[in-house]
Image 1 (tube, rainbow, N blue to C red):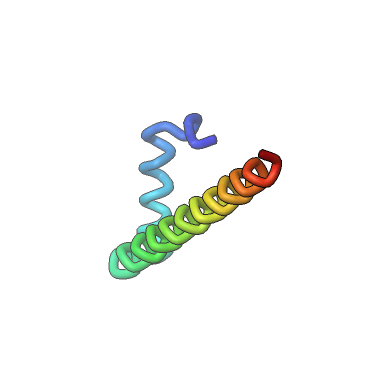
Image 2: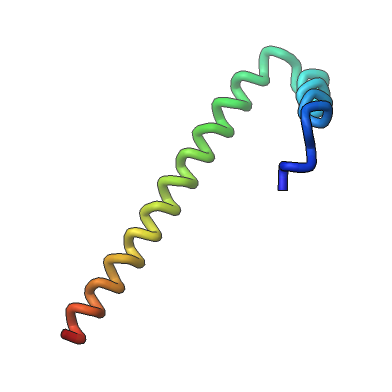
Length: 63
């Protein structure tokens, strides 16, 4: 998905973000985005672990 952007595209996005949000808000936005991504990964990991546990329980019942 992001492989077609390239370096010039990333620079353009960063410049636009600086213009729109200003240099004081960018660290806050980056931190919030990072925390959101971290929480999403944690939730996804928990869901996949729950699915694995359910499959193991079903196999135990069959045996």
